[in-house]
Structures are given as C-alpha cells and as structure tokens.
Image (tube, rainbow, N blue to C red; front, side, top):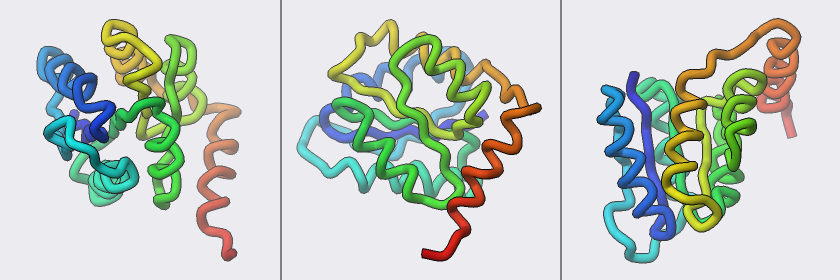
Length: 148
C-alpha cells in the first residue's frame, strides 16, 4: 500500500514521525512535503495529497496541520476525496468503517505523537463496512457531481 502524506509547517514534526511509522509497518509513504518548519500554506499540501489519490499515485492520504481542520476543509474540495478529521480511536475507526475516508487529517497541536500513530494504524487497518453505509457514501459522491 502507498499512502501520500503531507503537512504544513505546524504539522511537519508529526508528519516526519508518521513517515517513520509507516515505513516500520512496510507501508510506502509518498512524502509530498513540506520538508521543514518554514511557514507554508496548508491548502497547497492538501491539494498535493488529493491529487496523488485522484491520479492513483497513492491509495490513501494523511494530512497534518496545527488542528487538522484546514487540511480537511481543503482536501474535501477535490472531487473524489473524502477527508475525515480524526482525533480519537473511535473517529479513526469510523472514518474508515462508515465513511470510507480515503484521507485522514490530524492536528499536531491537538494530540500527542503516540495517539496520532495509533489513529493512523486503526484507520489503515479498518475495512469499510459497506451495507447501509454504501448508499450514504454514494450520496456524498453525488453531491460532488451536482451543478452549482
């Protein structure tokens, strides 16, 4: 499995820890930046991860900023992306199990490293449940195709 990952400056340190974690689990990270704590704009990095998924360069994506909110909002603007802000074991599980999220976002200023790695692991290893959730995910996808 290949997972695209990116962060802004606030999320840089946690992103680096997640990259190491993924490698330790024999999961290939596609690190799309940022590569330092120099100030950058989070929408640029959310778009990079979203595009990697849309173009099939990665199966899933992880985005990290200060709160995870900006990354979630930005990634969800791209057709084909379901990005979920994850902040607990339960939200990590439900993002995969019920929402079929292909991207999770994490807040480097709102959680510690150990918790973040636990959430990543849960999300990666939780399959989509399907069933009654399939038509709901389809409805989400249908919203993308409606004309404005």
